[in-house]
Image 1: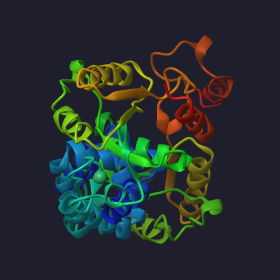
Image 2: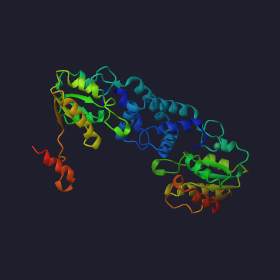
Image 3: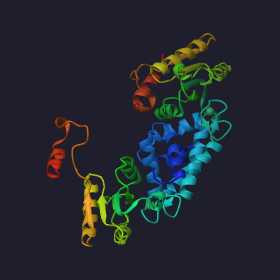
Image 4: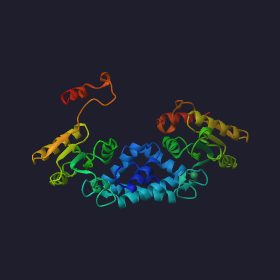
Length: 196
Length: 196
Ligand SMILES: [Zn+2]
Ligand SMILES: [Zn+2]
């Protein structure tokens, strides 16, 4: 598009975003340069800030700007219950139900052998260490009810049960095949109460 | 999502991109921070570079990093023909046909009274000045065949014809390679009217 190497580089940069093809990237670049240069500058600053400041919580692996995230640092949370979710968005979905007052472990992904994502990538070792700290009494598996989420739950359950931990799974109130992020809150809340 | 102001600011920055809602912005931010921090840094640099270096060609208004774009500066192009397009992407489409060897004027938009986009925003004044330079003999209107594109072509045609310029419009017709049976009726009707 047009007569500019910088523009071409910008289009290529935008194409690295998930779900953005060549046409959308061109449209985004055109929009930013023609109508929202302040937005382009704000986005550049936000990207740099986030890369510089966002890291993983030492206890639960979610994104945070501190050593320990606010949920892990909150002494009012029940440390005997550990809820395992795939992503921060899934954790937010569980939090919004207000039906869980324990702590979390965020896998930041799911097992996916076809994509080369194995136990190391989802922090399996750290999860086992965390779950076996002597304080955690129950691990609630809240991975998605997709094929990969179920396989991930199964692998974690095997590893933890063999170490004598109580492991539960969100009840099948959540429709099969769906992702937590898109499920209505009362369904998630019921699934928490009915966990088995 | 999660425990970070920087992350929230990044999600808001991504939402300023056209076609990106709250969910996509969260997914993009997660992807960049979890799997492609180099991509995030590259995008930040590309945005800054583009904002700093990309400007509008003084003659045709398209994006360029120079005072005059390479198409306008090319002495082999026929200066007597001026093709008017809405965007650099449309200009690229016409260029790829290799059927036009004249010059361009890029409106960088289209008239859209409902969105508050008027003649000033599409450089109507500059277009008239350019078309009336004494060298241009024919102005070819290649705005899109949408309601707004047609209205834009109509407004430009009125302004230029009243100044005694030859103004033509891309022919409406049946797309090459298509079967009449599957072509919508208004297209066939237009092709009949524009038969040659
Ligand atoms: Zn944490
Ligand atoms: Zn130019």
